[in-house]
Length: 258
Image 1 (cartoon, rainbow, N blue to C red):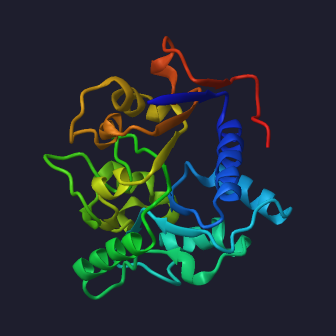
Image 2 (cartoon, rainbow, N blue to C red):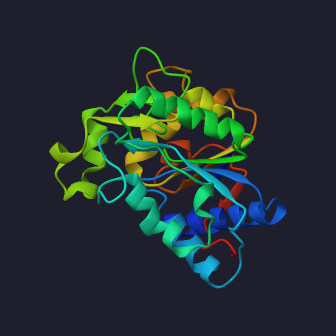
C-alpha cells in the first residue's frame, strides 16, 4: 500500500484534486467511484473551484457513488443524492445520464442493487475509486461483522456510523436511517485504481488496522491490503499511529501544488 502523508486536510484535498483532474485530462471518459460524508467535503470544494476556473472538462466523465440511505432519494435533504448535487454535481458540467446514483426509495431494493451492478459493468467498470474510511474501519457502508457482502447490497448501519452521519439530519442520530444501499467489497476492489483518504485523529486506529493489522471482516478496510494499486492519503491526525513508517510522499510543509 502506497501511503502519502499531509499536514492537514486542505493539503490532502489539493493533492487529490490535482490527481483526479490529471486523471480526467488523460482519460476524458474516465469512470469515477465517489464517496460522501465529511471527509471528501474539502476535496469537492477544491474540485469545484478548479472546475469553475475552466481547468477540467466533465462532459464525458461517468461517476458512481458508493452508497445511499434506504428510504431517501431526490429531494430529501439528508440523502447522499442531495449531498452530491450540493457538493459537486450542481457546480460542474456533467452529462446527467453519466451520473450513477443508488435510489434509496426503490420499491425493490434487491433489484435496485442488481441494476447498479449492471450499470457499473456496462460502463466498463470503475477506473478510479475514491474512498473514505469510518472510525470503525468501514468503507462505503460495508460495516464490520462476521462476513462481508461482495456486491451492491442493503446494509444495516451500526450505531457509530449513524452517529457520524447525524450532521445530515440536524445532529440527531436517531433520524439517520438504520439501513443503506452500498457497493460491496468485491465491487470496490474491482476498480482499476483506489485512493483512500482519511483525516482526523478519530481515524488513526482504523488506519493503523487497515495498513498493519490482520485482514479481517471486523475491519473491512483491511481488505485493501490485498489490492495491488491502492494509495492511502492521510493527514497528520489519521497517520498518527504510523509515525515510524516511511511514507511515499510527505506534504508536511503545507499545501500541495494545484
